[in-house]
Length: 388
Length: 248
Image (tube, rainbow over all chains, first blue to last red):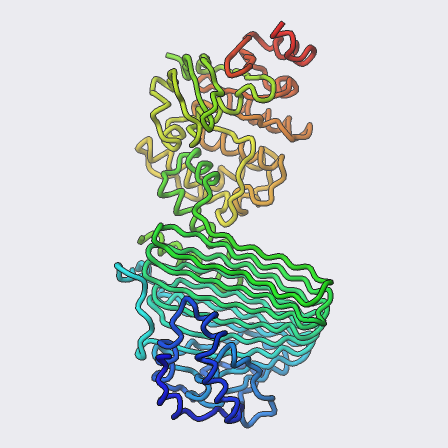
């Protein structure tokens, strides 16, 4: 493959990975699984950009409340990061570049949300583990919104799908959430930076009766690859994910979600609305894996896509892998255009065609908004359509 | 000049002739009820008038307020003052009822060359009207018809009718699925709308709605054409004897 072999060999294994593990991680870059999960995005280019990105080893600039503490990961009592490097080899590369990483230890429920800064363009951040103690609740936010000065969202260059990440532009982060029994976490992320180039991995492990809420919203004019892996490892653990994405003319979005039901009575609810405008590419791969011991698992995944332009490309692939008879599992993926019945309803009330189309597009996206950034995200979507 | 003049109208749906030489006149200030058995073309007439895609006029003329309706886009018909209350109102999650209503009203004003009404004034008017129709004003914040019961959807249609102040209201089985209370509320809304300046075309299966909205004329539609017309007593006869006597 085109990943710089010499550059890979120069990398040293991160502290939580032995040499053999790191060798397998590097091999996985060229493996079958990587080829499958990177079918619509060029792993070699992203890996090369990651290898050449600035390494930010310093601690994350988070204003920590007294209920939480920051430690170097390799000096803490936290076990090694649990990341499937066969599936996510870039996580190993990122750690090799940016160091062992950091731990935010949440011992009691904080009084305010923890704001996790997004890496700067061209930077790979050190992995961050957020460990939530039993019974605690934590709000985690990452916000990259355009300036609220009334100026329209910058329009991307026309004439083609976004170029692949350059070493100067790619930002990368690995965030691991470890939720102890009866704890709760809410991860809300808004990525509305024009022409962003980003790869990220969100890895979550939930113990008994832990609950995770995900709200990821974005408008993509450049390249955004989001890997999410949630392991519902304890009995009764729950995931609720609601998200919306607008892929603007020239943009590429690639979302890869894997939810593992690894214990009894686990529940997942996933709703993702993606809209592809202009000449863009939008990919969503949602995989539900129900393990042998996960009796009574209850999973529901819905991915709806709107393609506003004939030249927009939408790829959606819901996957089910079930190793237990006693489960409830539903998934659905749709790709379509604006609903003709709804369009006629609005026209019959006197709205002009362009108004009706805009309103329906916005409504479709808003229906995938939730969490603290729902309102600014809706405004950013509206700004896009106002300037389109 | 009639408010609505339909002459020799023929229309196909998916290539199948449904309306076959239908003629009808509605004057301002009048309420006309259209009744008829299933499949007679009642809803097709409503959709043809509103300009729904897929409903093709193959012959005849439809004049609305002296303008040729057939050549107009659906939004132009609405802006000209034609309103269709849907039999099955569409749910549109993510688009709030208030936002939708304001956009619709602004479109009407723009078509008349008028300035938009202030958001505050419009919202106040919408809330007051909603409350008068037994619709919780909180529903205005929700997605259009999202999660509404059948009765709430129909009340929402009447709310739009009152807010948009059309010249002609075409109500397509607005009474279907309504309980007695909702029926009376909806009927009160239509009666409130009624004036010397506008007209109503009321499509219904049942005479019960006509106990609350007294029509000036009742027409019976059968196999795509009007086969009988009369006053409100015709509806009572239909209720008592059905449609069979019309073909005897």
